[in-house]
Structures are given as structure tokens and as C-alpha cells.
Image (tube, rainbow, N blue to C red; front, side, top):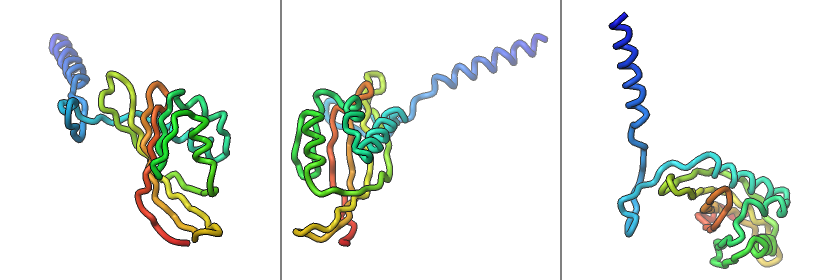
Length: 165
């Protein structure tokens, strides 16, 4: 019985010791945050981007509003910026209607102890032909910064012109 008790205590000690295993980090940062590394983010932050994408596809802008901060900073792939949700919607809806596929998403966090995650998402965007141009397809990348369930900033990039239609 004494050996069983020792084995039990050893098992508990190993279990508790494994809970203190170092957290896996990746990458590097320069400047004032040089001592930090990136951590994997959470599915919750990715789910916000996925939800917003679904609402965008159905053009339910009012249902999207709660997912955006009042002080949203949006930068389009053309370099145009806006600072409110309404300006963002106007910028994104004033132009050619496009179709897209949501291709990937992942989240990283520089300091999980303070909150805020950087969600990266990729889209294949199809631009139809217009009177002024032929149609084309781009690979777009979007970078979201999400704090407490709200998108604080959104920056778009055109990664690659895939094809001419």
C-alpha cells in the first residue's frame, strides 16, 4: 500500500509539472517589444472574422456593426482609409460588385496576458468585366486586430493578380 501511495504522489507531481511546460512561441519582434514572441491565437477571434464574412456575403451590415469598434481604422488595398463603421461600409460597397471565396484564416497574439489578437485571412476575389476593364481575379489578404470581440483595425492587401477573365 505504501508503494501505491508513492506511485500516486509521483503521478500527481508529474501531472502538475507538465502543466507548467513552457508555452510554445514562434517568430520574433524588433524594437521595444524585442523580448516578446508570437503565440498562437484563439478560434474565437477567427470566428469573428468568419461571422463578419458571412454577414458581408448576405449584405447584413447592421448585424455586422456589433463586431466593429466605434474607433475602427480601415485601410483598403488601394490605401484609402476610414475611421467609422459607416465609412467602411460605404467604401466597400461603392464600386463594382465582386464575388469571393474565403480561403484561410489564422490568429496570432503577441501578448496573451493583455488581450488582442491579429487575425490573418485570405480571399480569392473575382472582379467582373466592366465597360472600362476586363474582369480579373486577385488573391487578397486581410489583417484584422481584434480586442474584446471587436475589430479595431482592418488592413487589406492585394497579394497577387491571379488571372484575367
